[in-house]
Length: 325
View 1: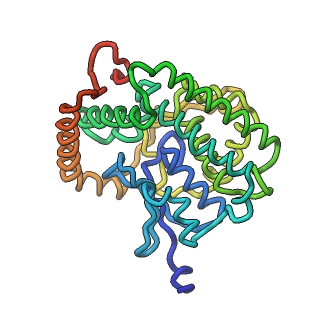
View 2 (view 1 turned 30 degrees about the vertical axis):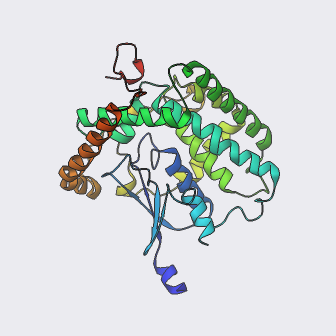
View 3 (view 1 turned 60 degrees about the horizontal axis):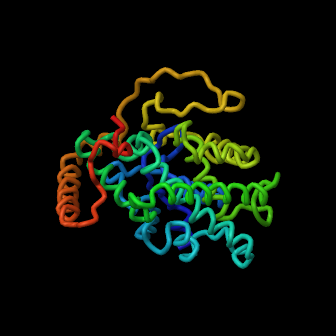
């Protein structure tokens, strides 16, 4: 068994790379950071067939698979199943438990709110639907907006109040985390834990994938030590890794989000010519099957939604949350 482990590496399957990041979703980035912090060898692969699947990210090791939507997520599965545990020394510390809960709830809620409800949907489109035909991508986007509103408990009547609560909680979380971190390298015990991994994933996504108009991004930028912390681990965990053809950004370089000139300025890069990757070739071969299955799912969803009295997907003129053409 030990020899098999030496020969075989984990494979982390994520959504495609984008925005200068190895993968373009906060949960994927958190698992990526967790494996990097633990010095676990792994291959990075992309699922381009079902970009909106809640199983992503997932980890494969032989016949073992840990999915995002099972057992509390990939990181918890890796801990409970004995692969790698960074939390063994801090799991009983009340302050660590509270900090982890803030990141898993308040910051996670704020990110999905901005991605799907509190913005024009541009970032979500680039991450999830840019490879799909426009009508299908638009329908799947509207479907996900409806799902996120249900998750966050948002209705037309309480939309403003919920927005205020979400941003207030996120601001309180950033303030508490900033105070706890100070100028330390890690939050607890002078070593990385899953708290560091999850926050790094969320912060990288907030700084690099959300637009400059993002309220959440502006609140994070108010805490210089959290920004330095994020940039430090982007440099160590992401930029220092030797890129392979499979980890190159799969978004148009023009989609990169401008950064603060004092720290993140960079010269614009011309769009390079490149050959299609194996993932893209595989995607094209399986595109017809994917489109058919997704279209069936959408039709079923719309038929169920049409029979609901409280459906919130009203495509009226005042619903500017879906007008991002």
